[in-house]
Image (tube, rainbow, N blue to C red; front, side, top):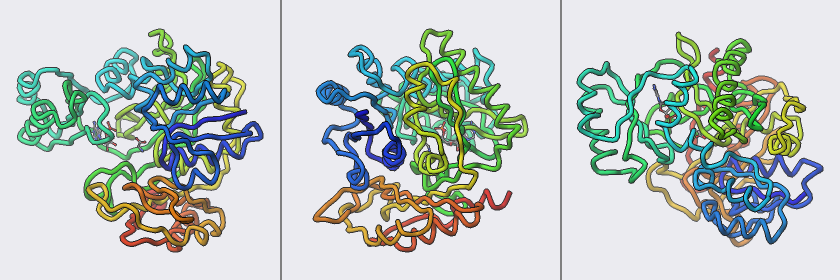
Amino acid sequence: MKILVIGSGGREHALVWKIKQSPHAEKIFCAPGNGGIAALAECIDIKADDVAGILAFAKKEKIDLTVVGPEVPLVLGIVDAFEQAGLCIFGPTQNAAELEGSKIFAKEFMKEMGIPTAEFAAFDNIVEAKEYLKTSAFPVVVKADGLAAGKGVVICKNEQEAIAALDQIMGEKIFKDAGAKVVIEEFLEGEEVSVLAISDGTHFVMLDSAQDHKRIFDNDQGPNTGGMGAYSPAPVLTAELKDEVAKKVIAPTVRGMQRRASPFVGVIYAGLMITPRGPMVLEYNARFGDPETQAVLPRLKTDLVDVLMAACNDTLDKIHLEWDSRPAVCVVMAAKGYPGDYPKGDMILGLDAAAKIKDAVVFHAGTVSKDGGVVTAGGRVLGVTALGVDIKSAIAQAYEAVSKISWGGAYFRKDIGHKAINR
Ligand code: AMP
Ligand code: GLY
């Protein structure tokens, strides 16, 4: 098969790496890819949101399966465009991707389906939103309705902070049209966990759980990032809770989207808070998580191409996923300054030495090949993953691999996976 992966981050490197292990994969392309993906796939210079460009390429090359990494092309309707052209693609249609593309859609959907989530109100008018705050219990969480690259959520301790958030999102439009509407919701306390399921529109299979580390500094301090590391499985999600999430969250999501005539084919990513009231959904994503994928896929024994094809062909009921029981830890190495401004173009040293560490694999996120080497090209630069007999040894192996890698100003958290040890 000829397989095309869309995207350029660590998630896409992990997807390409896993797809490469499949006997089905004769040729892999990645649009646009990165410096690490280039070793496994032919990178083509088309941006992930250039739907027309990607479609033209897929037609010309007669691609057998396209796998979409990021959310933007999904929300732009890349799956609809491919399906109209009779091409096989793994991901939700534009309507189904609304689960991620619109927080109001997601909240109203969950309410209709009885899926546990925080109490909320939705507004398209700033005056009414501010009026609502007068009767709110604090903290509240203010969320821009549309896609805001993970930055559209503000936790507000009091009315003043919430008014400031509304002024920025709805008044100054810092997220442009994505903030034309907002959700104001109840603040939930607990531990977060990411649960991903693959759906063919009718059936689904659950992936093993993972936990992301969103804040930039150790002990979950500082601003939010795209994710500074992950581990899988997440012990906070016990077998009982996993069953509960399958029954109360994933199954009704699949059923509800089918009922709305927008069957969801692709990855249903439920960002959950494990609260004293049970697991509650904070958000949906309509794609694989980043960096969760870099911790989850190295543990998957099943051929990923078989799974993705079954999702496209409505035969996921025939698929059973096999997992390596060993935990995996992914430590993200970022450029100094991230998530603010950061330099680019620094030569990365030690990649070969890191790859020699037992059961370690270095996924590239923001890198490009240059002069026979690899240089930094993004905020999150690498995701260094390792497996271990237990979580402690997975952490030790991952950091051993990290210690081999250097460039001027490399930054990484020192506490990835510690919550899993403490359990
Ligand atoms: P979201 O994009 O909706 O996942 O929000 C980003 C982050 O904000 C989540 O990972 C949580 O850490 C936090 N968050 C979102 N909604 C809530 C909530 N209702 N209560 C507490 N924290 C939340
Ligand atoms: N790890 C968070 C995300 O993929 O959105």
